[in-house]
Image (cartoon, rainbow, N blue to C red; front, side, top):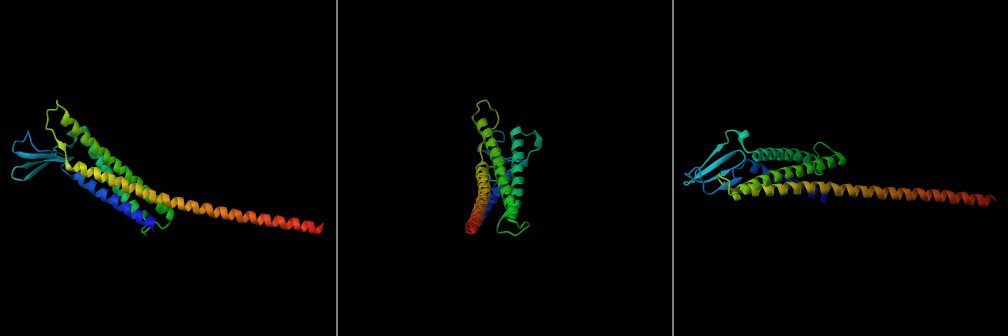
Length: 225
C-alpha cells in the first residue's frame, strides 16, 4: 500500500512539473526589460522562444511571432529543441507510468511488466527534467552575460518570470522520476529478500532430510552387525 501511495505521489509531482514546463515553453516572458530603447512607445518589452511582446503605457500588450525561426540565435534554437524534447519525453513517461502503476489494471497484469514500465517512465521523467534544466539555465546564462557585457550594443534584458517557473517545473519533473524509480527499487529488494529466505529454508529442510536418512542407515547397519 505504501508503494502504491509513493507511486501516485511521484506521478502527481511529475505531471505537475510537465504542466509547468508546458506553460514555460509557450510563455513570452523568458527575458524582460522595463525600458525599451528601440520602441520608444513601449513601456516594457519581453521575449520568449517563439515571439516577443511590447506593453504600452495604456496597459495593452502587442505580440508578434519571429518572422524567421532559423534566423534566431544558436542558443535560442537549441533551447527550443531541448524544451520540445522534454515535453515529448514527459508525455511518453506519463503514459508508461500510468500503465505501470500498481493500482491500475490497464494493459499489463504481471508485476514484473508493471515494474519495468514504471522504471522506464521514471528514467524518462528524469531525462526530460535534465533537458529542460539545461535549456533554461543556458538561456539564463546568455541573458546574464549580455546584461553585464559593456560592449553589448543591443537591448539588455533581465531574467523573466518564465525562467523561475521552468526551474521549479524541472525540479518537480526530476523529483517525480526519482521517486518512481525508488518505489520500484524497494519492491525489487523486498522480492529478492523473500526469495532468498525461501531458498534458505528449503535448503535447510533438504539437508535435514539427508541427515535423517544417513542416521537411519547407520542405525540399521549397527543392528545388522
